[in-house]
Image (cartoon, rainbow, N blue to C red; front, side):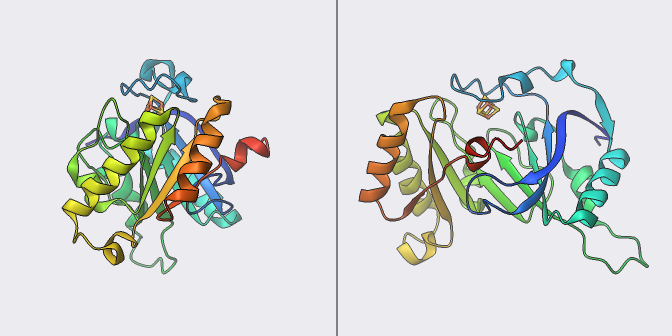
Length: 219
Ligand code: SF4
């Protein structure tokens, strides 16, 4: 049971990328990641012991405040949030008091899928990494697949991931279309934009995701 979680930051903003881009969301960025992507834009979140531990109750209070202000979902991100067992946290968020008829906030997870699944989520964004592939379960259950493009090998990886998902699901395009497939250029690599755009032009299953929060200088 995990009653304390290391938090890098928590804030209310707009989701900047992927299928829910542009929507009001509350973000909790958990510390810790051993996936080691060399282009990672949150390297500061890797070291768990640099960050304070927050009780689940204190996080719940902040989530509730954000929900009252209009956040339509919570995004648990990182770091790699599933380095922590999230069963207790998600269950506390979802378990309403008996006389509380308000709906609990929806929980979105952003993960690389390298750990065991814990917690329960209304939306899972899987961002698989070429050098550290995800566990099969995430390919099956993810609602959204987001591949970060840094070079042409990542485009090949995107194709391989889609093929793997087709093998694991019902192999038809109508089944696979229930999932959302995004290609997102590495923000710090100018060549990545043109690679991603050309790929999406030629592969209509995929959609370009841009990090709107960075263009808008949002958190
Ligand atoms: S999995 Fe995410 S947080 Fe971890 S190194 Fe890769 S991009 Fe950074």
